[in-house]
Length: 122
Image (cartoon, rainbow, N blue to C red; front, side):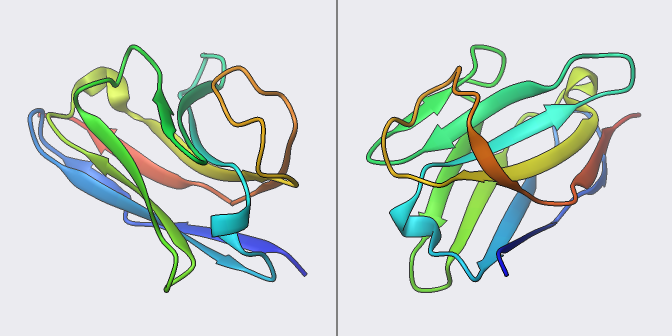
C-alpha cells in the first residue's frame, strides 16, 4: 500500500525557516514525479514545487523554497526560507504514477499525504 507521510511543520516567525519532509513507502519516490502543494483556509490549493528530472517552482516561492530528493531514504523535502505570513497553510506531499511529464500545472497526482501545518506569525 502506497503511503506518503509529511513531517516538519510548525509555528515560526516571519523570516524564519522550516524544512518539511515527505517519507514514501510502497512507492519509490525517485522513479516518480513528486510535488508539494499547500492550501490555506478560504483559498484554492496551490502547487508550489515539483521534482522529476529537474525542478519547478511557483512564482510565489521562487528564491525562497527548494525541493529536493534523498533517494537513499526515499524522501522528498521542501526547504522553506524567509517565510512570510502568506505562506501559512497546510502543506501536502503528492506523487504521480509516472516519471514524465513533471511540471507545474499537472492534474494527475495519484498519491497524497495527510498534510503538515505551517504557521508563520509574529
